[in-house]
Every structure is written in structure tokens, then in C-alpha cells.
Amino acid sequence: MVAETLRQLGLCVPLGFYGVGPDEHFLIERLSFDLDALAEPHAGYGGTDVVCQVDVDGIRPGAGKPLRGYRIHIRFQADGAVFAEAEGSARVLTPAAFAVIRNRRTGPQMRSPGDRCRWIPGGRRAPGLGCV
Image (cartoon, rainbow, N blue to C red; front, top):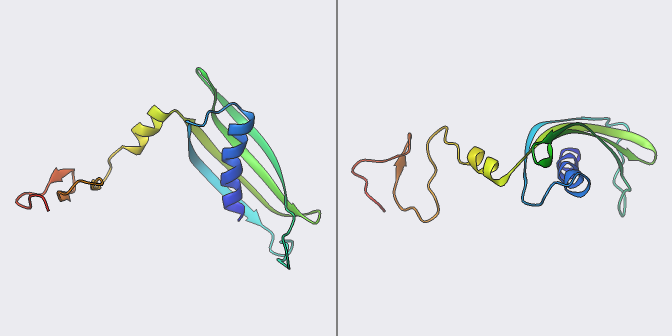
């Protein structure tokens, strides 16, 4: 729950408070957390109110856009006791920059949906196999 909440708040805060557009992409660079098992709330009947205190720093503005990167720190509290702390950092990428990173080939190429030919490492069609 702690890591997923960090991820979700790491998306929500820049979109809601730093002018990042919905077409931008996020690249998580670092994610870590500490959990105090003795202070962690115990699930009973119904829900547990958890308060997340969020601090953002390390703001890196980008040319022509409000935010290029940031660090986020979160304290998780239940019943007034801190039971976890998490932090992470991320970069904000334009759709074009994200496409470059997403399409980078480092190993055997994956088949695209609808591509009926077999591939071998290096992105070449396997000789003699033809299409299936």
C-alpha cells in the first residue's frame, strides 16, 4: 500500500498542483519506503483513516514546461502515529521523449500485435521460417 500510494501521489500532485498536462508521461527514477510494523494500523471492521503528509522538493523546471523532474516525500499517519515514510523521484517527459525511451531496443525484439512473422534476437526475421 505504501509504495502504490507513493506512486499515485507522485502522479496526482504534479498534475494537480504543478501544471503538468495530462499528455505528459512520468518516469520513476527512485522509490523507497520505511515501515514501522509496530505502529502500523490494524485493519478492523470498516476503513482506517490514513493521513498522508506530502512534501515536494528538488523541482527541476524544464524549457517551455513547468516541471521536468521532482522529489516527493510522504509521511503516513493513522491515529496520530507515523507508521511509514516513503520517498521517490521522477522525471516528466513529453510524449515525444517518452516514445523514444519506450521504443528503444536493447534485446530481442517483441512481436507487435498483428505481426505474424517470427523474430530472432537483433530484430531480424528468422531465415526459412516465413510467416505463420
